[in-house]
Image (cartoon, rainbow, N blue to C red; front, top):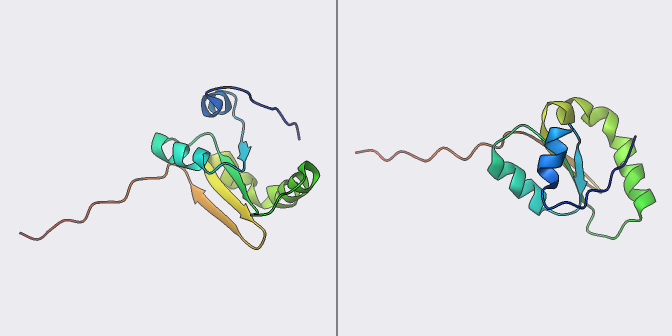
Length: 102
């Protein structure tokens, strides 16, 4: 696995163009992807609530990547926490507004 550090104002565009998966602890990326209504790039969001060393982060990612491969390949936001794993497929669609009876 290769790791590329992106110091760009548009990391989602860079990742989408080159078919990369974003890995972050910043929840803003998930919100940004949801608003874009696209299927790429995928995002792995590390939510451990405790500081982790880069080696610990890499170990968590490597331990979970095999079961997440298909979801990430097809477009997903994956949240990895210490005790659970959540997957939400992209695009994240807005909720359907309730219709009032007339």
